[in-house]
Image (cartoon, one colour):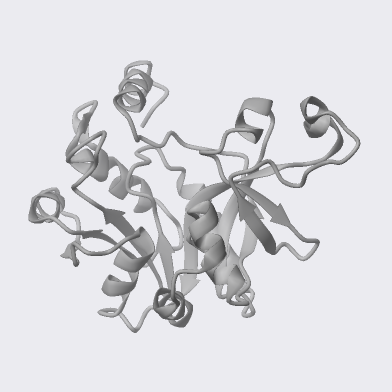
Length: 250
């Protein structure tokens, strides 16, 4: 089974322009992500998919692989799909977030292992929620999972709504999970989902994976205990630099 890791990297960012090229302890963010991805036991190769020649040139300069993609893509999934068209020999595509410089290679391997089951065509990761702030934060998508390890629904709301109990007590009586945004797709499934029109649930929650569920596709989940820092704001960047300086980073 050949598995291709693709790291979507967009230059434009409202809060952090040129985010992939930002320096974190002497290395660019995209270089740190790339190096972590290359530590995976199961990825056959790793490629950065970017809309900007500055990122592509930088990746090639440090010895990585990069391909330029359309600037019109609305998501990393679309960017992955364009690159995957050039690599039909790969069975599995892993979509690795380009703004997580400390991503754990073990998480990538956990996702890769999902595809040892031939019935799995789409997969992602979840993590148990341990505090109310995360549970009620609309910026953190929650996931409802069935007994077969399949995602039933993703939402920015705290779901399920536990009737008859105060929200402050929900975590004590029911397991709630948040979504960890790394995806795996069989090559044919990636092509399929990018051809689907935007769905009503996707519009409502602004979560692209709802389009897949709404069209009857199945997303399998694996639980992880690790979550790496995602850099979206200048404050996140400061945290990452401090993590490096305190020798707890990579």
